[in-house]
Image (cartoon, rainbow, N blue to C red; front, top):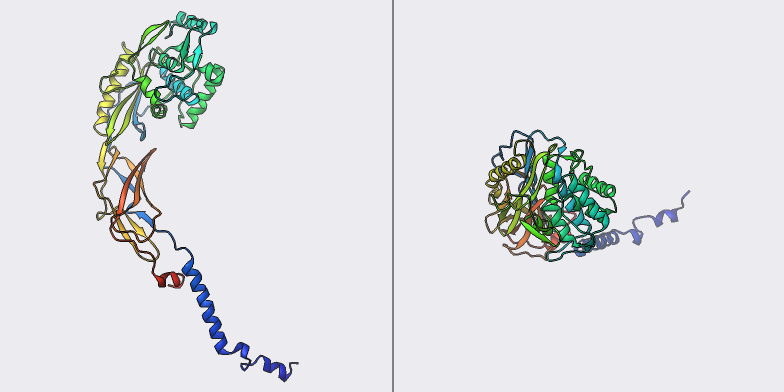
Length: 413
């Protein structure tokens, strides 16, 4: 039972629980919370695009050859279009695109460099004589002859020397089988789902691929400046073999600067090509692939048909104006409502082709507030396949810092 004295200690007359003291405590608590909200960092300014995706007007159109299979793309936009019959077929010496790519991945070269020197052995000479007897494409070598990595790549890609493909594979991986395993691993990584490599040169009928897959490997190979340099060479000179010539007789025609031919009875005529296209100050490459041309002049048919594809594609792959919604490409958004639309101070153009879809996003620079109007505060990113194009955006209204009262009462308003 509680005594009267104990009851009185909890009464409202107790000074510890007087209304004035409670009010003071509430005011102090509010002040502490307010100061905490005031001094802590405010949220960063964010932005969003006016639209998340775009589609360029029209439809990309190319008349592909009726025979074999074909495809066209670019070095950054990937495969754009292809014939409907994409199945694994023999590709002959087009195989050497992958061979050269893996050599340069294992032993990269910078412009002006020639790389390590390899000394030709008795085994290399025996491989040369054996391939020559089988009527394969070869580069003559002598025991003790020294050839640089760049020379070996020239021999691989210009006269398409099968014996040099073997020498490079064994140098990089130790054996043909180990190198072939790397070829297939890389094909899988690149999404070349219709490709299987059975040898390093393409002589084997079991080395198969599709036109779409050859666009994929050519796309990454053409990113290497040494690869681009070599495939564009019409000829080269060697100590033993003398002057060798590029089998690609289309060099310099239709703007073609490579890449690789191939021809066997099983594969027919094959050609993977590249032609440069200027995009403002940048240079890109249209890539065409034609496989399986089996005519009286199969390789020439592949060359001619490939050139026709490039000619059709060239006029469609270009800069297109990017329209805006109410002259806005995005908007600055912040919790304290100091918002602004984002514009571009010049006409916005993106590189693409009719029917291309792309995703849009806006990145905001981390800058101090206030941000005067007209500042390069954001970047519009337009992404399609591996291509990312960036356009500076400016705020139309000044972005002010949050007010004193907003910072003080940010969670209560």
